[in-house]
Amino acid sequence: MLQRKNVEVKGSKTITVIAEGVKVDGKIYSPGATRIDGTIKGELVSDKEVIIGKEGLVEADVKTKDATIAGTFKGNMTASGEVEISSTGKFIGNLTQKDALLSVAKGGLFKGESIIGSDPDAFKAHEISKEIKNIKDLA
Image (cartoon, rainbow, N blue to C red; front, side, top):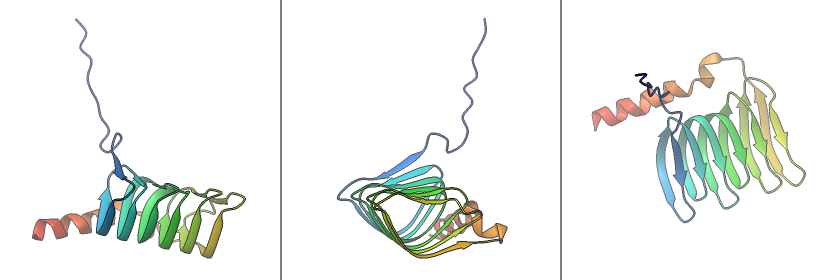
């Protein structure tokens, strides 16, 4: 009889959701994708993707691979992949990317600097996640 192995890639099915009405103040690390429909203030590291819904408000320093902004983002973002600002999205702050992969839909707002960085360590989200883990180990 054939047995099927259940092979999972760590973080592949992980999605963190900050629902509408929820407010978070502090540091968040997500090994997968993160969707924000509530409010975040502080720091956010998401290994896969950050999605800010229409009602979402993020006032934070963010490190991620990809980002989609339909709500409001204020702060500094470092993204190793694509950043998309939808027609309802507002990005106020600085964006640092490996490559120029920024798109702004008609009606969307980008106010700040778009920087193409060359430091490979700046795009390693897992380095910050190690810092957060070390802080948790001390507690």
